[in-house]
Picture: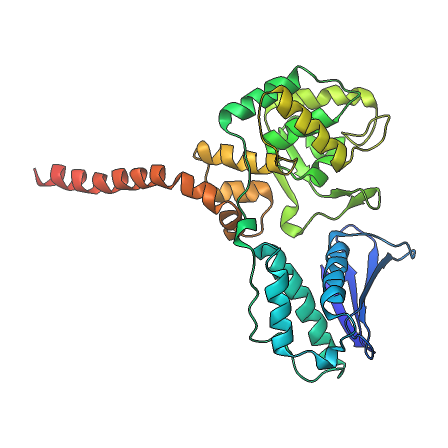
Length: 343
């Protein structure tokens, strides 16, 4: 992806050419005189159509936080102490990963203000983002037995006219994100090689596909025959999109409602479980079957294996004792080999 940046009159223009997508102009602006903090974000394609993205939503969230805390305060008057107190307050609510996104967005805005000579000092320097440790990265997942019960429950309710149960099965067997599943076309599935190619994601906001989360999200994964034969039932819907039906494309709300219904039928009590949790369950299952972490990382579309290790750290810890025993056994082999050699 090629990105060009230009600073002009307090506005940061980002012109990006996304792979296989239309040209997009993003504008992030802030007031120079009064509040100085009000961030205005717009993103339009080459046809002038406004597009909504998760990044845009993040900008809106940060804007609302700034407006609530710094309402009426000029950016020139914000001190490092003011900013640290702001971080202390909002940090009580958000997890570490969310705070990182918030501070990154604000620091980018402050740097633009310095470049445009609105302010002379970076008040975000040498500040520390606090966060709510109770809202950490621990994820909810199903046990192997619960996964089997859920699959059997769904299998008994399959109807090609209602594609969401098929999407749930796809998430269980692939670990794909909801948007990636919804964006699948029949051309993405190779029934001979038993693979699925993930090259795009579905965006309900624009009711169309978009580039995946990042470059590493473009991947081809192996799938089992059961899933492929089950998905073939959807061919009767006569759409290029695998999960499109006469009612159109499924939404996350209906997908989560359907999942909760199946969990209840399978006698699985997971109040906070949602569609993305199926991705976590997929990882937990693969770890329980001794699948290598690097292979799991590639399957998930993570750019770095450290990302997988960080997100699923506590899951990995659960298998640490088992792996420690394997290490001890392997080390013992050295001694046994030495003893055989000396005798």
